[in-house]
Image 1: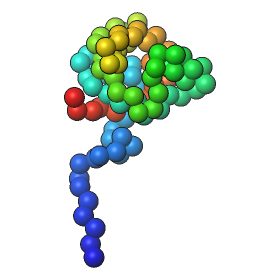
Image 2: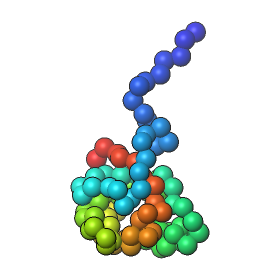
Image 3: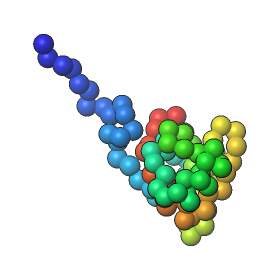
Length: 91
């Protein structure tokens, strides 16, 4: 019996990942990983962890990345944003 597979990635680990600092305004994303204990603790304070879905409201060059999760807007500092790995998601 043959197995049928799709060419479309269904799992976040199969999609091309990037750092949150590389995301563009308006992109819907899923958090894949937060690197480092300090960044993980800060992200958890914002309610962001692996599997969380966010939308980039504004990526300010050299400044914070402003994201929304549910109905909350959060400004994430550049250092923490650089520790957050994300993948694109459909809205």
